[in-house]
Length: 255
Image (cartoon, rainbow, N blue to C red):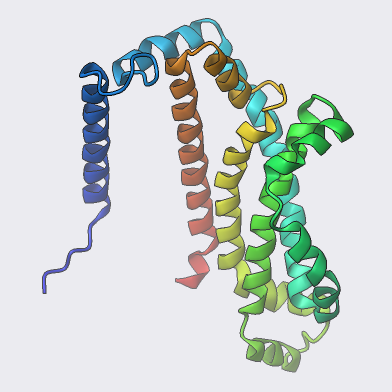
């Protein structure tokens, strides 16, 4: 059977062709008026809209505003989520004590915390950071928890035989190295979850990409809305690519 696995160049080429086909079909749908005028902008309308946003300084400022609470929320949610997941996965007593709390709070979406963010923090970056941190927290919590639970128990016995029997020693020399692929996978997923939460976090008027999208949609400026949708997708792709480089470097020891 012929090997159908694709190399990096082939994947890039096919991905580019796929995007070109998407934009071609999109352009045709709009030009043939298969959708009502004004509801969907043509791809050819995006460049002028983008240039207008850049010349007015709105695009740059929106990105900076969103990054200010995205990065902070991502850091807080990732650190707390991984920390809690590691502890709950490593200490059965803590796991049992917090199991009910986790099952109660986990299903609540980040958007549901927006009213409390307004009440507790007001209409500022702190509220947006809180909403993003909540969303990122659970992704990292379950990734860390699952990664710890999947560590081979025999590794702990071997570590104890070499004098690493204490909790801290096992954590540093066994748990973290063995669970690192799962931890990094959770961090990577959290990057995307954080960007998806940005719009929800900015619904209540905090400046940023989501707020600019809401302003544009209220004026039926769908071309501007799509510009910021593409911008957010590009920012996610960039952060995901950079994190992938870091992850590959950290996991080189696995061969």
